[in-house]
Length: 267
Image 1 (cartoon, helix red, strand yellow):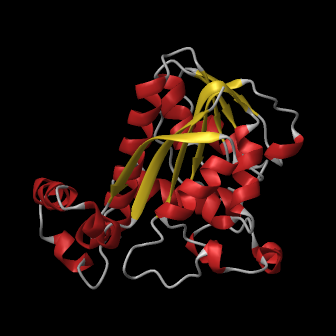
Image 2 (cartoon, helix red, strand yellow; image 1 turned 90 degrees about the vertical axis):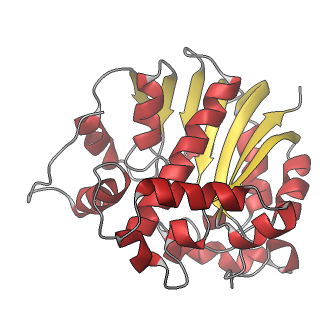
Image 3 (spheres, helix red, strand yellow; image 1 turned 135 degrees about the horizontal axis):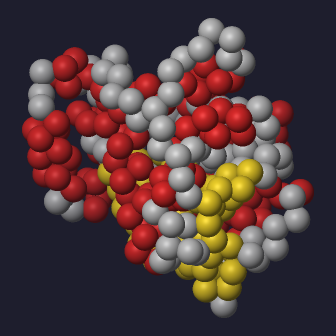
């Protein structure tokens, strides 16, 4: 993946994407908590794909934005389809492309005619932006081959600082339709709990293959711990993360901010 440099003539959406690339891929240290959290999500997502699919498998990356997962998987030998509502980001992603197979299919993923043709579908940090996560997952499931897989990451709704509503407690999710599909954390509608995820997964004809919960308040820079990250080495931060990963599940669900889940479509 090529490293690119900001240009003044870029579109505003390109400049915003580049600001995230600085934190996610290029080593910008102004917000270390975000960078550590993204690194964990990136690592777990790629590991889960590689766990169930060999190079050459067809992967769809939904709401792929600046394409970091798409580009990485293409370089690992997968046949990747990049998708995002923002068509203008196609040329931004192409600037970073170095090698590997990527096709670009911008637009509403549900109107592009995909029908059970992918071995793996990525929905990373997407489902929290939709008003009907249950219906969203059902539609995504229809685009993966029987026996294929979905890798989903989303903020952990059971994290002790979460103040957003629980999807299963909302009598009429349609009231949120006007604000769905907004980018960044400002667009979060529901942060799903693990029991809710299990329920909507089964409704969609899927099964849970593996669940990973990750990123504690230190590694995410929460509760005023972000300043400590300026003094701690990455090895110390990783040690802290490994320690909290060894806690009982009931505690891990409360103190970790992210979850990555490997799903399988029931044949």
